[in-house]
Length: 456
Ligand code: HEM
Image 1 (tube, protein in one colour):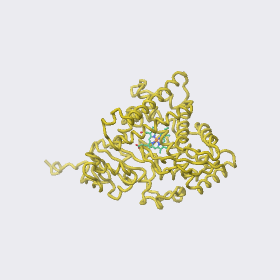
Image 2: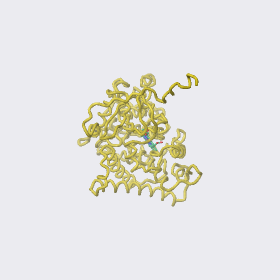
Image 3: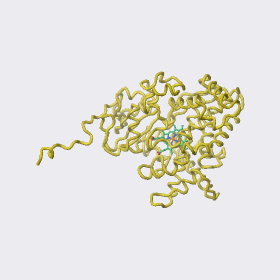
Image 4: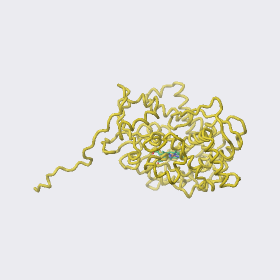
């Protein structure tokens, strides 16, 4: 026997430390009560305790990742899958068989089915619908009336997603139903995520009944969309046709449940995230009239005074930067979770198989260590000469890696077009009764944004 052959085998992950426990936990509840009480402040302070920290949520240990580099490493690593409290709470809504909650080969197959509808070169085909909806929004408003930004933002987000991707007629009545159902369901899901009371949510209490009714209506709406398309006998070249004709790994048609869950997994994140971001953009135009004026001047210099069109968007640098800055300060998706599928490491710390990991794009994107004037609304920080100062992965509102939002181009195009259309036509003012404080749910949005449009 040679000396080499008795050398100890190098462990796969040598010398790993356990991440420090975040301060401020209390007996039994651990950090849960702080997370439930003021989640944004809680997540934003975690980096002071370390790059990776342990949290106690009741009896459970959860790992929080707090630096841009490590959130990037987490999102790009094959050692983690979609899982953890956020996704468990969303499974009740999104189903287990749709792209947003699936893992492994099913997820890869489903991404291949939906990806063509979101490719950069597919977006111009949606241009006419986005233009019609953006101008339709401003034409609906009359001078001096009070605009309820929650319902207006949901309405346009749902209509654009449905008209572009599902080629559905989407009557206002259906958009309204979807909006009401989603608001109730998302509120309930968030509550179930931060206060996991298990069987208590099955008791026949009024809030539980309201939640169940909303969830049932959401699924009914999706069944209506699928049934209508089938009854029409049409096969337009769109996402819904791709979903209806998708095949599984054996080349067989996918099941009805998967079709249903896929439509839910597209329509649901597609409306809630975009609607929340539109609300913040309207709030920004009201709060920063100097940027609203600059957007208007830019649009007019590009269009010469005609209504802004989809093709103009790529030349609207300042308008795009306003959208990006709004997404930095108020990322609709403010918290994300993953589950380790193997013993692994992050930043030199040991992460055991099965561990839940959490991170907050909100905390990352507002960190003073990454951004000068971190809380200032400063769209010019995205100009080419300044953007190089932003650390890698410090701005990822659509995430990175294999779970990256497929809809980043689709979303950016409509958000910029809507911002341009609104700012050229109106100045916006908040009215008494409006409350633009941040309301935390599965997404972030203003509590109740009420605006008065004043024609320019
Ligand atoms: C402002 C708008 C939006 C934001 C900020 C946003 C953000 C995100 C983020 C951060 C993820 C990744 C989640 C993770 O890493 O765990 C994601 C995934 C996803 N988003 Fe979006 N999203 C937006 C709009 C949309 C729209 C319009 C659609 C569809 C019409 C959409 C469909 C999806 C889907 C299907 C996934 C799951 C992808 C996968 O797991 O492979 N999103 N989104």
